[in-house]
Length: 196
Image (tube, rainbow, N blue to C red; front, side, top):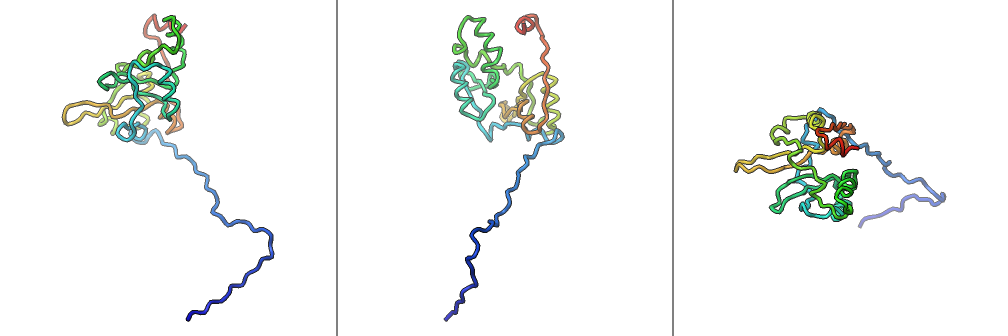
């Protein structure tokens, strides 16, 4: 038979400080421009991108993007192939207002295709070359191409070529804390007129 003994106890204080683990302030670790570029790639195999058909009205795109945490959407054709990228900031940007005015229509009549950046205007690299690159190399590519996005292609053994992911200018800013400055230079007379 076990014998138990009462511990010495008291009840003389009306409050005691709690002995809790101190809250640790989590400092977000920022990446260096010298680290591998794949660290800032939005990998579509890990997270499916937000996609819209080219004929989706801008109000629908805006609603869905606002309900998500995404800053951009992929614009696809009827076969599901990527034809462009649409930035959240461009939905109500000066270009959308100017285009609606030019067409003498309302903003709500514009389609995703009207505001997207066509794939042909986005710099593209292979996953193999990206695996050898640093974040600074990706940033320099975006600056040199004056582009918001860098598409990453993944050529497969079956000779098909698919877009594996994207690196966005804002994604680099988010991960590194360093801005990627873009300077737009007009390349045609119509771009100069549009800027005015």
